[in-house]
Image (cartoon, rainbow, N blue to C red):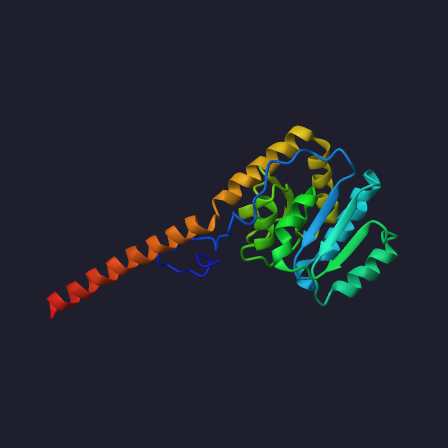
Length: 225
């Protein structure tokens, strides 16, 4: 986005990072039971949870035992609950409401696939939490999601606002045990690049480099005077 706005100064992208001692996953195997799908985040309209719900409707047709859990609270929650009722999925979709962050590291590993559909994520920390917990993901091609969900590596990227494609890609992951395991393992590797101390070291390096440059400029200015 900065480059599109013709910012010419050097840009280095550094993750906010995450404590992988807290979100510590392991390689998951494809579930032998009906899959448990998960969405976590603020339940606001721009998060497009309705797309996830519509995708799950299609997944449920192929896998009638599948379930979807939506974790979080927000202004769109009641409309999503009403939508679930209209779709006849009240017994297949669960809403937990707000869950304290301290409980999330134990929550993610209980699920099999993570589905984010937001087109507004600037990093997508819940996606990072999910892949660090070993979950393959199906997200959308918008903002930061493809930086964490590498298409064909640890999940798939669908077109935004396309529940049909999201459902199709989800079923592809759930149908292939070797792909599922490989996606889980690669997600753990990608998450490791965002380890908090590793990110802090990179940021410290940027500060040190820029401080040295600033010092050199000050010396040159003083010499010029």
